[in-house]
Length: 90
Image (cartoon, rainbow, N blue to C red):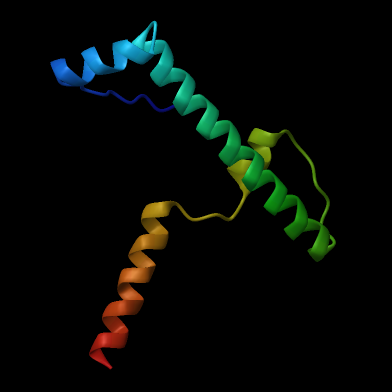
C-alpha cells in the first residue's frame, strides 16, 4: 500500500475550503474516484486482450490490474522521449 502526502499553501487550503466541506475528504474522494476509473479501464482492456488471446480470466479486479502487463505514465513518457532522441540523432 502506498501513502502520499500533499502540501497546500494557506491560500490553496482556503480556496479548497470554499468548495469542500472537508479538504481532506475531498482530496481522498478525488484520488479514489480517479483510481476506480483507471481500474475499470485497465480491467476492460485486459479482459479484451485475454479474450483475443484465448486466455482465461480469473481473479478480482485488483488481481487483474496487478497482473496486467501495463506501463506507468512515467514509463510511457520515458519511451516517447527516448524515441524522439533517437529520431533526432538519426
